[in-house]
Figure 1: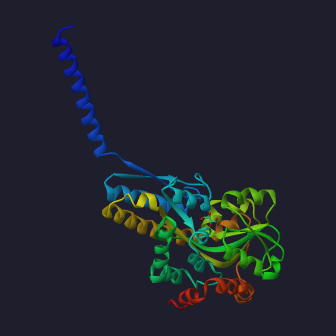
Figure 2: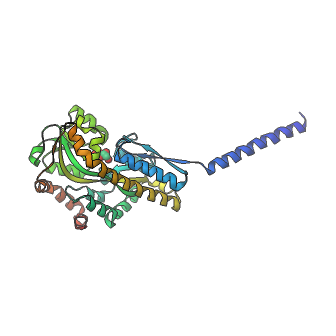
Figure 3: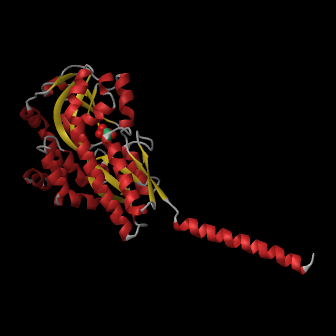
Length: 332
Ligand code: EAX
């Protein structure tokens, strides 16, 4: 083969390689970075609204450089599994209740105490103030980045044994709690037989009767059609349940300062979106549950429940001190 032909072939190979390099370079300049955001409620929930708001805000702030893929309905596992996934980098982001967080960041248990938060306004002041923000900062030592405090809501009790009006009515009742030591101690103190399991197992356990009841905010009850598997609702409001928007430190550390600012800004939008959604859903939520046949106990003797739950405080204070709890109570 003449040298010309060889040259001609080598020229066309070089041209092909060059165009491939240009194409790669051009696509890499616009390579979209995709990240998963996992949560346990379904998409049509207050978590889904918060996740959607986060995804849209990230797309806007990054001009399409980052794409957030929502993974609702426990698609990537229960809340505790997903937090462990963030620590090893198998999942990038999550919206999670504080249920399992105390197992990773013990100080966060202070937020899980019964009858501690007076109302939503008190909870928001604590979470958005120095106490809540410094708690978020503690996540980093565990390989987690606490971006913002979103909202699950005040938790209420459901069961299928009897209407619960006093702690005595709960005597021996098998109540599912989150995998949370403070909640476990609380329901033990109230006289129930608490079972800590992941949300992924709750509906089946209720259907099979291996547990009698569970406790969750109104938006979780309505979006899961809880009336289909629970007969009684008591508006105990026994615990305020924050939701944290958390990122894996592995991915966070790869972001520039500007990009980190985008994630923090978008997380604040998601947090407010969840709070607005909870208020909207709660307006009609109890009537919706009642309209589907749930018997609703609206009035309980809060002092009686608060006194019965007191041993949970004593156990925590021995272990973690009561200073943080006193600061939360004192927040106006
Ligand atoms: O985070 O596990 C629970 O009861 C949580 O409230 C629910 O998964 C939403």
